[in-house]
Structures are given as C-alpha cells and as structure tokens.
Image (tube, rainbow, N blue to C red; front, top):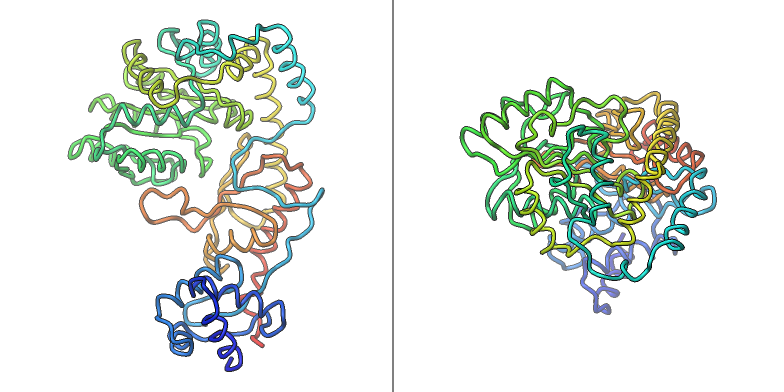
Amino acid sequence: MNSLEHHWIKRLAESRKPAYLVIPDLIEEDLASGRLRPRDRLPGLRDLADALQLNYTTVARAYAEARKRGLLDARAGRGTFVRGRTQTLPLAGGGSVEMSMNMPPEPPELAARLRDGAATLFAQADPYPMLRYQDFGGLPEDRAAGRAWLKRRLPHCEDDTVLVCPGIHSALVALVSQLARQGETICLDTLAYPGIKAITSQLGVRLQPLPRDDEGPLPHAFEALCKTDKPGAFYCNPTLQNPSTLTLSSRRREALADVALRYSVPIIEDDAYGCLAVDAPDALATLAPELTYYVTGMSKTFGAGLRVAYLRSPSARQTQRVAGALRATTVMASPFTVALATRWVNDGTAADICDAIRVEARARQAIASQALANWRFDAHPESFHLWLPIPAHCDWSAPELALRLRSQGVAAVAGAAFSTDGNPPNALRICLGGPQDRDDCRYALQHVAEMLNDPHHLHMPMM
C-alpha cells in the first residue's frame, strides 16, 4: 500500500473536496486503473489515518462512504476489503428491477380500459370546473362514490362522515395534527409505514412503539401505556401490513378496540391494502366506530399517481374538524383525479382493477414461493410485497444485502426503514409490483436467493 499511500497523499493535497469524499473517489479510480483489485485488503482506520495524516473520524467517514458506493466490504475482526464495482446485470428491456417502492402490479389487460375511461371523461365533462376551486372534501357526487367504495369494508358508513382527500398521506398529516400536539404521543406497532414516522417527526409528535408478537401489537402493552401516559391516538395498518404483510386477526382487533374504548383513545386505521384481502376480518372502524378514523385510497392499490383517498371520521363534527386541517395543509384534491376516481367507482372499473391486481399479486407470490423456497419469509397471496428475515448463518446485515443487491440491479429496502423502536429486524421488504413484468420479478427473486445461498465474497481468500 506504500505507493498508493504516497499517491493518495498527493491527490488529497491537490483536491478541494473534503478528504472523506476524496478517498472513495481514489478507491474507485485505483480499481479502474488496476492499482487496486477486488478482495485486496485495505489498512485499518487508525493505520490509514496515521499514514495519510488525517484524523480517525475523517477516515471512518471515508470508509463509510465507500461502503455506501458498494466499493468495500467490512467485517468486525476480519478487516476491510475492496469489493469493486459490480456491473448491473442486464434485465429484460435493460435497466434494473425496482422492488423498493410498494407499487401495485400493472395488469396489461386493463391499459386500454383506463385510457378509454380518461378520454371519455375529458370528452364529456366541462373542462373549466376542473381548473377551479371546489368544495373541500369533494363534491356531493364524489363523496357518494367514496361512501360506495368504503361500504366494501364499512357497511354502515354515512355520507356526512366521509371526506375525499388527495391521498392517504395527506389524510394522515391532518389526523396526526388534530389528535396529538407537539410533544405528545401516538402509539403503534414496532414496524410501521415509513410515512407515519416522517409525518410525526415533522409535527414534533413522539412515537411510542408497542411490543408485538406474531399476531401484532400486544393489547396488554397498549393498556399499560394508556394507564401511565394516555396516547393521543393508536395508529395501525391492520390488513396486509406494510412491511410485514401481517393481517391482524379478529381476536386481536377486538382486544385492541376494547382497550381503545375503555380509555377513549382515538384509532387511526390506515387500511391502504384493505380492498385486496378477500378474507380480511372486520375493520376496527366497525368495532369502535365512535373512536376510529378510517382511511383507505387508490394510490397504494391502483397506482401512485391516483392521489385519491377516502376518510371516514367518527362523527360529522369530527369530519369538519379534519376538513379544516386538510384545507390548511393541502387546499383540495385535484378535481380531475377525483372525477376520474368517481367515474371508475361508479362504472365498476375500480372493482375490476382491484380484482385484476389481486390476481396478478397471487401470480407473483407464487413466483416468490418458488424462487425463495429454501428461505422462510412472510407473505400473503393477495399482497404485492413480502418480508424476508435474513438468517443468521448468511452473515449478511440487511442494509449490506440491500446495498449489494442494488449494485446488481435489484432494489429492496432494509428493515431499519420501518422500525419504530430503534431495534430494526435484520430483514428486507421486497416489493413484487411496479412496472416490471413476471419474468423480471422471477429473475430478481432468483438473484436474491442466489445471493443468500452463496455469499462467497465474504469467504474467498484475499489476494
């Protein structure tokens, strides 16, 4: 390494960039030139810091940045080794497989129908009202469509408790702002949708994770919290949970609803995937209707661009309060998008889309069962994501595996993104939807399995 050290010292002196960014650049350049080869061992942090006359923290940041770029492997007790740039593997049509965003699959047989529906709406509607302000929460016909859609899960939904919102995320922003002040607490599972973490952080609301078992958050932990520090709300994603795919059983829903009722704790029921599961238990909003704010929508199950959600509040008065919060944060939903959703609900297109996506999800889960047959993972036939714990003997951490997969053209998300208790599980969420087809899905999952089966880069002799 002596010649490299002299070369690096010279380059560091010449560069105006911070040293912690120059060192990864140098590793990459030296790999390209042949000065470094994959599996070469690099000096330890303190040794390199002394050789380059830098402080220890700077070199530690440099190695961390190099690992982030996929240039290094590091293991406690083994040292730091050059990994090298791995060429992205070619996929059908080129590019890579996006399995980090939980997007629904796109059934090709529906494309013409969706196109025709949008064209008909433009042809028949007066375009100018779609460019104007509209009644917040949706026009009467939009709320009626929302109520019709909600009745698939909430049979007794009333029109004056329904709002049309520009996506589930905006509804959650309004609800959190209404139910918990800055510094107050919302309780939830130890695994949760990252959006709720971002929302509460932005609003200064604390999250209190509830211990869980294989069935979800523990009711007795919820009750213990209510006795000592009553939370502003209980947030849950009870059906096909993101990320674990868990669906709370009827018994667990009843127990959690019972605690909420006895301590008057509002429930935020984020049922983003509720329409997919044909056998889902009763919604919490039917067990505790006087406390539950139920929200579902189309962006999570139809397509991210269809920013339409339907929010059912416990009463007309509370609906108006939430409407005020929504008006302050989002003004209104896009009139064209809402009109399109209303048309699709009324003419049956929305139900058909849901059915087609459910069929496609089952097909992709079958592919996952074959490709990952040697590994335990959590999934549901009608979900378009899965949760893959990393076995201890694989010697991977989930962030490292996610980074390695990304360097090979497969994008997945490590469990830390979903952890609310600071103790993330060593697991990956792998999404099966998105624009890729079944062949790409199969290819990517086989690649995940191969990576788990043969982590040879950790054990090959060093050159």
